[in-house]
Image 1 (cartoon, rainbow, N blue to C red):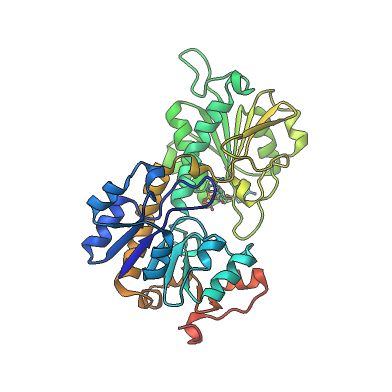
Image 2 (spheres, rainbow, N blue to C red):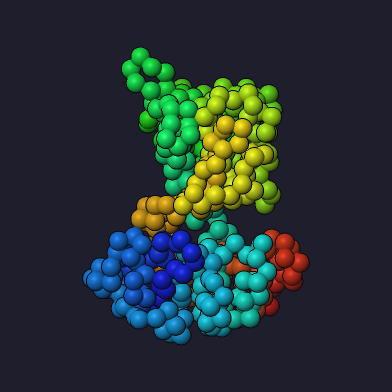
Length: 371
Ligand SMILES: NC(=O)c1ccc[n+]([C@@H]2O[C@H](COP(=O)([O-])OP(=O)(O)OC[C@H]3O[C@@H](n4cnc5c(N)ncnc54)[C@H](O)[C@@H]3O)[C@@H](O)[C@H]2O)c1
């Protein structure tokens, strides 16, 4: 198969669909890989590095869309990209179609086969191609909190880990899933005093075993959240209710009882945020204050570290991408997890949740309509 990697054109996107290491794997499996010139510059991988890995470099994205059997990207295609997709082509990338009618119509009109990273599943009911970005965001949340706690950033002027004889910062993590666990691990490494709150008792049991007493766990009642938030120097918002907006767990009224210069990091901002006073910010201007409390609410946190993010993403996408390259559409029919990733095929929506949220017709691939 001929696999193509265009340069990402969405604003502030520096990740790349295939790293040089992934290119080498595809080539080793007998595939041709074409990469748009400069596609890897955001991760420090120039064209020569891609050539050494076995790719051919092409001048324009147009050559990729015109000749590749499968296009591997990171972000959803932009209008100039979806208009170039072809009926016999596989698109493998993040799509997030549910709130995006325009893109969905563009993909339907192209006739392409679009597989969305975010709906590919694993045997444990997880979303393996979303998890690496949650890992990045969770770890980054503590770095962001450490920077925001500094006096120069309007924080209270406290070091996360303290020093011998001086207490460390108190960090409350609300939501103990992938983001929350990685935030807690990072904070534990820095020596913080940590509590994780979650509504899932089984999850709290796993966390209790995992951290062996290094981290406190609490069931996330309204009372427990209020107590922990008021006593915290840093609160990390990391809840997810699948398919729904994040619940507002920290109210504006609570801010008044917090210490001035405390920091709220709302990682769940991409689902609307779990603090009442959150609104999305950017890497260029990541924080603002409400009632003396610093808020960090960057919606695309992994974009800050494209080298780590691209490698983490590629580690997760590679096995699925190779299955698609080796078998073509048959891989989707054979593998239930890839099939869950299939969102659009030959002008039909093949993912029920996407079809329902857009009010469009759903065509299950099993029905034969879409196969
Ligand atoms: N800002 C970014 O750049 C970025 C990057 C990656 C992920 N995210 C977001 O971070 C959030 C968390 O993602 P994740 O991968 O950790 O999800 P996850 O499903 O692994 O974990 C979510 C956890 O929240 C818990 N939860 C749900 N409702 C709760 C409540 N009311 N109180 C306490 N806990 C509750 C769940 O039990 C679960 O353990 C999501 O909204 C995700 O989209 C944002």
